[in-house]
View 1: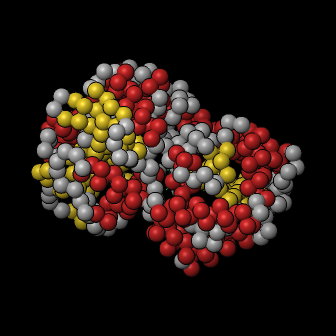
View 2: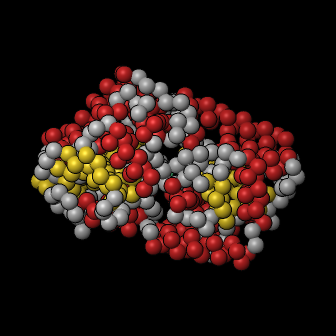
View 3: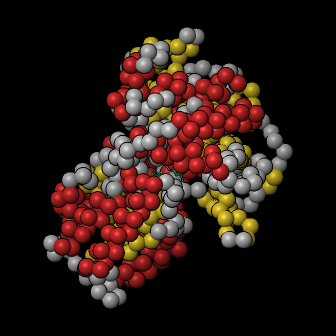
Length: 483
Ligand code: ADP
Ligand code: G6P
């Protein structure tokens, strides 16, 4: 991105997230370069902020020197610094080895460490301070995700004049799980600093309201509100509302890209390269243990072993973005996935014809859209996922009505996309059968399902999500709301 340094100005509409939409990446001894940040949060919020000309407070992805505020070019970015020990304790530790696994059904055991919690508190304070310094009087501040759950209350202490929204991108667990957290009361009180707390699904909002009741943090009342707000918490002097706002994608942007010559040509080349008539199965994920990549590979291996498919007729392309690489569970997950890929190719491959193409890398948007378009079957099989934008992106990239979507029932997206082939990824033979059924789906049915899926992602795009959250936010409390 082009960067233009500017003097600080106050802003009416602010998004606060752990990551900025771009991050500085080291390149050997050369100057670090700006790259697009990974993950669904950035994919969703970037088009919103650009359209609304807001400002973004977040970390620049480096523990070295932090750049000053700049424009990129129509987005104002305010970097918040993290040092090496905060990166380890706040980011890798409390955010990604305590909260992330705990909130994802504890599919990996969460670790609880006092030093990580202290760092989390300290960094949340810093985010609150930076935000308080740049928010205009009466501004609207929209805080994002599990890394910053204390910021709503910390910001309210400093700036009672601003309107505060919070949105959680990951699942909010049932009280029995959440209550394991030694700092559960502090975290809930942090969230209750917001005027509106948003979740992906109604179940998450209900879990939160129940938890508030269990912890006696105010009087929580469920229902009695027009959706998407599902309940309120009455605190001395004010109320906090909770609701469900399923996040989405910039459907029009991706559709336009999907129609472009560059993408269509590239999709054809990919098909050709992989061997004209072979069916292509595709997985695109951050390399995260919640994504069910190993389950998917095991099912693919099962289909090969049982001769239901062969390396001659089917290929699996798995693109895995490097993610949180120093965290133990992530290291192990990578080793597991790479061993599986090696074993499958070693057992079922031939010279010049391997069944799995595995790339441990990020790809650009054109390449990603071309891959979606080249695929016969998209595999989205997380064990637990707040939403999963890959599923929605795949649908948006298929104006040809081609391709079948296999979707885990444990992804938030499954609640909105019942026309996908829904599957329980823990059930290996069911996963094998569903993958095989997707390969064999009759054309009429495939087109019918895709048409319905596309109708949904067109109506419920990311702009609809932002409008619905921000208008619910503007209905209570005070502060400016961007148009
Ligand atoms: P999460 O936020 O947990 O990573 P999502 O599916 O919601 O999961 O969002 C992932 C986002 O990252 C999507 O916008 C997707 O296009 C993008 N993405 C995932 N893997 C890659 C990759 N290898 N290269 C480029 N973009 C990727
Ligand atoms: C998920 C989280 C985001 C996070 C993203 C990428 O989408 O909900 O908050 O930014 O993953 O993970 P990272 O740790 O690289 O920021």
